[in-house]
Length: 191
Image (cartoon, rainbow, N blue to C red; front, top):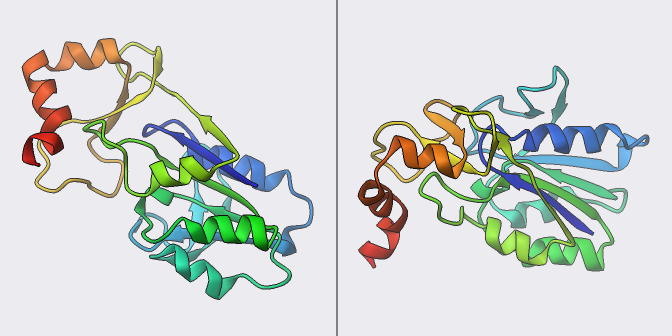
């Protein structure tokens, strides 16, 4: 079984992952992972919504999961999955062949509203997807979008600084249609 929590920045994806973790009584069969690329709170799963942290193994590629699971591993938690690289077939193998339950969390879209990293492939093989909305930073309504305030000199910036969650209406208030078209279609224009 693969269950994935996705949504924009500030939607409590990691908190949802940790709430699920806390519901499991026997923790000795659990392994937790996060990307080394996520330099916030290295070595632990941590949510701004909860005080508790959970030790996590830093990895860069999904294939590294195979180095860490053993016959006692029954459940895997992976946070910030969008930052990982590799073949999602590893997740299918662990879930189907090794009978390991996998819980993952991460961003589904970039601030340019493009699919983020390997997330679309993870969603394609997930048995269940929980799409969590944030609260719009401007009006308080459900916010499915991540927005970056300012200019970026790279595609993605690790961390929370500059990122806000917005509803479509408030996004359109912040930028005109031509600007949004350039922001959203940037990748397509370069191809």
